[in-house]
Amino acid sequence: EEGGGAGEEYLFKIVVIGDSAVGKSNLLSRFARNEFDANSKATIGVEFQTQLLDIDGKEIKAQIWDTAGQERFRAVTSAYYRGAVGALVVYDITRKTTFDSVTRWLQELSMHCDTTVGKMLVGNKCDLDDIREVSKEEGKRVAEEQGLFFMETSALDSTNVEAAFEVVIREIYNNLR
Ligand code: GDP
Ligand code: MG
Image (cartoon, rainbow, N blue to C red):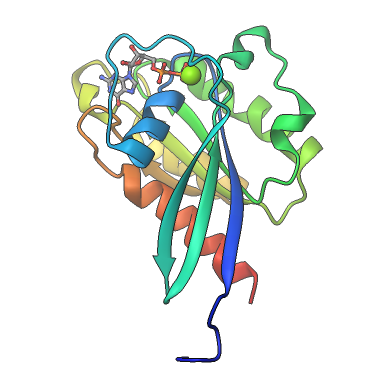
């Protein structure tokens, strides 16, 4: 494709949603800056981070949005979702309640974004396997039922963090063609 696609660039807005304290902000900081914060509070003022990726020789700019704590008030604004072409729906494998909320997050997502949005169900904190409340099989089953990709991740030890974002980004890219 040398020559033909010169200068082509893509900007993908991706939202990260899920209950409070499941690790959304840390997944984002791990992916974008390779950082983890054990005492993270709601990040103030940071709406999104961008990360450049190369897919099939094309430059993709992933603009990944963080709720910055809005989700505590059960009211993530429609501005947050506007224009999103991808979503990571995150739960914490050590807290079943956060897994039960996944359906509600998917409903909210479907109210704001069209059905073609690339979606990944993410079971985070897989480093805490010994206190797990949600099995990998349960996660997989819900993802299959709802037609989502699925991965377990750890923002703490980096397991699958890049992979989770990249699978969504590649899916969005493939859907364009
Ligand atoms: P958010 O509210 O969904 O943005 O969650 P945060 O990213 O602020 O994380 C909430 C808490 O979980 C913080 O104390 C993090 O250090 C911790 N945390 C986030 N990801 C992981 C992980 O993968 N493993 C472990 N063990 N702790 C995590
Ligand atoms: Mg956060």
